[in-house]
Image 1: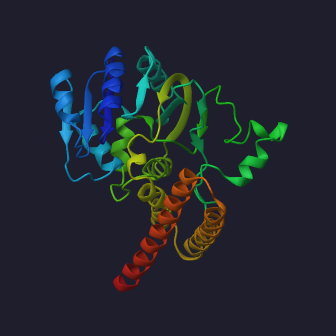
Image 2: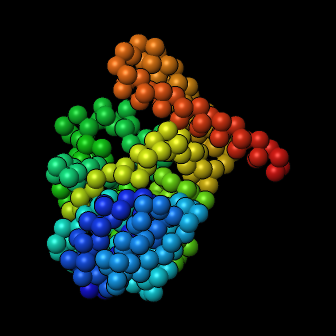
Length: 315
């Protein structure tokens, strides 16, 4: 096996242990854990229970993309399967993905099929954001199109995920990254702390002539949100911050202004929606959930105001 495995982890000890056990069963060329400053003993557990695994710890928690870059640098020239710590590889998954990569020389990034622990499909292929269509996983237009029989399989949201396909981008929970592609684009943009880094990577890879593929030749179990739910409101806000960061990275002029207007309108609608829901909610758990949402939207707005001030000061 020539593929290496890199796992980015933050305070997910038990999930990390299970992920490492599943990775070892696939016999990769190397396993690296990029720990982003966990305080739950994750690094110590890996060193104690998995002595052949390389552990790279950055106590400053620089984000997912930065962790991925650190881990991949330990892998020499090997192609890499980058994993979230809350994933599990099925036996034979790595070999199937390596064969797919070898059979498709223009594929620079390959995403396997993601399943929940209950075996349900996790949709993982999406269109690139555009100024008029923000990077929302639940796109309202797609929700309509996916129920139209002759459009469902053409629409990424409604597609059955049962065959290989060239796609714009795939979610970063599990990604095969060809090392030549990684080097050509300079790795992940580390200014993305969380969310959006895989969109940006696939976007820049396409600009360099590489393709991104979805390949259901292997299934990966994904628990989901193990690290991010620890700071749910902050992570919700981070999603919007990263979306605007993507637009600033790849758009300017009218395109950027349009994207900002659309994102601002979407944010206002969410604030109004959740304000009404909070006023009507009786269940205490529901009220806490909505209060977290409101805190997230306020934080996102505050961040955007400060970003605008910094941009004006730099002019």
